[in-house]
Length: 327
Image (tube, rainbow, N blue to C red; front, side):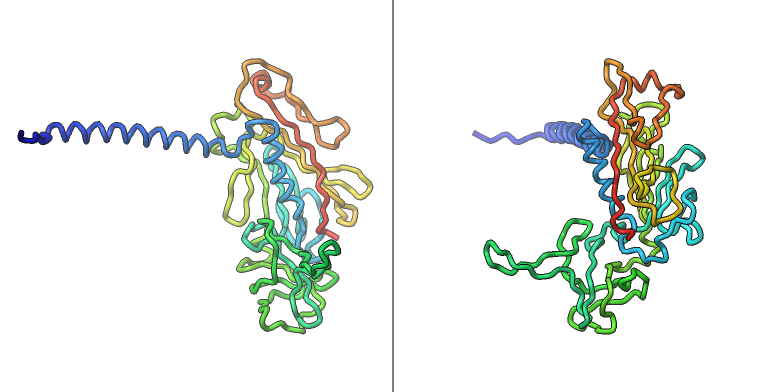
């Protein structure tokens, strides 16, 4: 019996059906991917909101890291950008009384592979990023690392570009460290990794509110993305943010909008109200900051969208962040 082959018409039908099915799968896949991307910075649950906020807290805890003493000054806590004659390393303000803007200097800011690495240069010119300790339990000598990168990796004494501060945190120079050829003239100094970045220009970090390209799940009205900008690179950290404040915490425990004397500054307080999940079917009164916590309570009732906002859940975040790098 002679085998019968496929006709051209049958082949064309099969090809057409394959294209239709393939297009359907591609459309489905593309939609799912875009949906996941659009929701990547939206808190699905209250726990998610705090996880996202913890990343902001981690960033803010590096304020002043590696910054020389000449720049660790706050002459006027109201300027809207870092300026040698105003706020050399830290400022928070409201632009046009609407968009919150926080700017600061940190050598951990660029988030590179070795960002955040530092060490002490001993009398031989060797950069020490760890020292050896004895584990009494196993009687084994082990390295104890002083330095961890922004990516939470241990920092051996990498070859590369560093800035050098003396023990008074005064800026001495930018230099290239070679582990195979240590320079004793650099002794008794702190060294902070800068790589190919320019100090201090490339180490300015900005957190600001932006209402462009909001996810469709966000509540209507004055809702924002919290953007993080380093140099020319900007990306949303948290979406659907209703309010963002930063307060200065004094050494006496006071909380204020501005502190002019850095010696009286001990911490900052992060205040945020973030949307959790999508619109709900049952309304509820949105929460607010604690009255005695130092954050300015958000005035829901003066906004035309208040009744609509009651159908969304909100997480209130109040976090004091010690500034360990300004002393």
